[in-house]
Length: 280
Image (tube, helix red, strand yellow):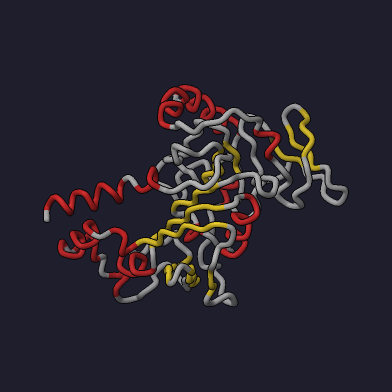
């Protein structure tokens, strides 16, 4: 039994590397944070700091800063995409899933499921999610606690039996969804909102100096990244980009991207890291 337990836990810890990746094209990691997938060619992250994350963002390969509900990529750019523990953070899950379908042909979505959220709620999670018959069932939370009773008991910290059960059977508490072509989902309460959660305003005021520091760190880590990733490809990031608002092409003007759409014309910073969170 002890051996089987160790095998089961090891298999779970290696799940990132065991995902079947369809196609031989580029791979996108959405919400890559401080632990990007080793096979990803491009990283997309909204937050530079540790909001919604335990670690600061890692930039060790082509990276863009953008919102997952309006990605700055041309349609069909990626053959596969990863979204580890991202969906549950979003006010507009349907917009995010539509963007995943638009920019990638297949992918893997992982989140805590509703059971996990009930017994160990996170105040930065806006959704409860279950996978039933290969369909994502999504419910917007009406506050930080999904359950006003169980959510206050802190079972994983206070009860050793629950903590052991959770550690031994992590798959029972997570959504692990592989999709190809179409993401099947049901939003159970679309009329509700998640306005109870507010992103700190300072997170949308990214300083150039902060991005420059992170870019410098990525150079020092590039060797480690090359060892971890055996699928890394050579490509020009500019060739993949499109306006996140209208999906028109960009023209590059030294340190800016300028949308060519006649009714758009938005400009975004290109250096030190492409930043599509706020037009300039």
